[in-house]
Amino acid sequence: MITTTTRQHSLRGHLPGRHTARAASSVEHQAVLAARLTIRDKWLLALLYEHRVLTTGQIQDAAFPSGRSVRQRLRELYLWRAVSRFQPFQQLGSAPMHYVLGPAGAAVLAAEHGLEVKDLGYRHDRAMGIAHNQRLAHTVGVNDFFTSLIARTRHAPSAGEAMAVWWSESRCARHFGDLVIPDGYGRWRAGHGKAARELEWFLEFDTGTESLTKVGRKLIGYARLAESTGIATPVLVWLPTTRREAGARAALARVHADLDHPHAVPVATAAADLLAPTDSHPSPAESVWLPLTSARAGRAGPRYRLADLADAWPGLAPPADPTLPHAGENEVSDAAAASPFRLPPPTPVPPPAAPNRVARDVR
Image (cartoon, rainbow, N blue to C red; front, top):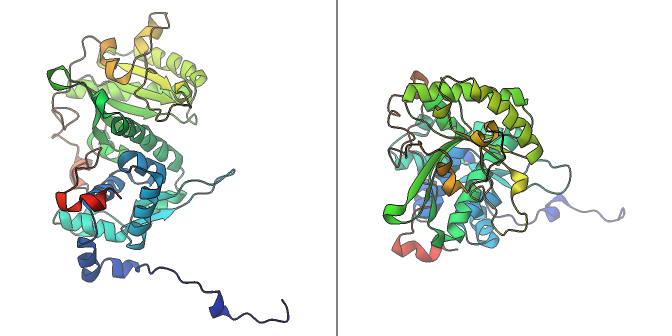
């Protein structure tokens, strides 16, 4: 009421304390985090460093059993400044919370590997800068592609499928950027024991903003990479709709046919609207992949599961090493050698919890 004066201090509700950026990097704060961060927490920090930004749903798909548990743990990590967060504007409804590596989390990662934070090339303002980056939706989409595969393996372990390797666009750029920059690199394992098979691929994630001509011409860079390494690595093109997929396949087929060695660049396409929205955990591992060879032969051809996609290319050699994209990876470019990045890529799934931390890790 106009006749009642409200004092400012009465409007201040109790808020849980959150450390300043300087306090988060202090020795005292690091000592506190040593008793609070679990193995899964540290794995998540490495994942955020590698892939820049993850939404609440993606983090849940990758490592948590429920929405409640992931929100509770992320709130604690946020208060400790291990992670930072933002919520981008969305025209209709509310966007999910997006998380990036925080200053305390960067200090933990650096200390674990005997480095200074500056050696990681980390700056908090740059980490948060992705909130306004024009490629935010693309980065989140790429990460959604891989985390949906991880969720499939976590919720159906009996299928014998597993995400073995997941590289970010920035890591791919450091190793292959002088020839081509994939949106990601992945390796999918299916089966058990000696019957297990692996498929490695480079991902091209299309959001519908590029011209189809530009999408097709990307195969030229992959052909140069195959010529340089002597290894044929499939290129998987993920598109938003089957209508755009049809146009993209025509553009890809034109370029593919003009390559000197088309067999060195196996290509397959899929569209997001092929996934059943009623499935509890839809993922690109389902029967949605159509090899480009079918289009060139003038027939529709069957769509393959990700685990069976290698059958479309009988001459495709299996991956040579379970941890590297190709045997010549040690011969990196000058740009890669000059990069401050020195951490190995995190495993796509969190490591098992230590026995004395099991109770905390399942929260």
